[in-house]
Length: 230
Ligand SMILES: [Ca+2]
Ligand SMILES: [Ca+2]
Image (cartoon, rainbow, N blue to C red; front, side):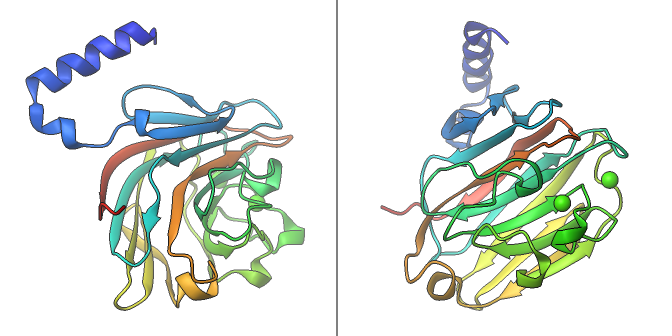
């Protein structure tokens, strides 16, 4: 879309509904790699081209001392047999993009916590044959090091929007991952101390990549509930 058209339509939207001005928009994300704004709700992390990587990071850091509930839609493309590689929902101290292919833009990010939505079986990483969800640390893709999962899920690559809610309760130290209305992964532990070495302020975002096989892969903003911190 032409930038002027996007500006006009957003301005029109805000004039019609002033309350929406407080909501979050795709403009608040810093894009890396091949990621591009698709429309007012969605960022295309990767197009369906081989060997690319993309990332979208929310520009303000999150403080894990406070609870949050982040709801987005994931779109994992429409190539099932020939599709790859998937999207990772990531927490990391800086806004970087990791390695492509099986790395899904997450590999190499240290320290980090990532929730993967993996659409391609890499046998040497312990991937199940089905699309799957897992909680990973430090950009390590092998499931022998996963904090939770892998949990097999029905085919993710049907072109549709998959609602994802990631929530964190510092009181119970529980991270929960709900996809398509089903709780698919849960991890309880001291993420601040054990993953981030005592640093509670991290950025969050989504990364994705393709390899020899490919898919377009998008993240769309739904509802972000978090504490405003300095
Ligand atoms: Ca994989
Ligand atoms: Ca699939």
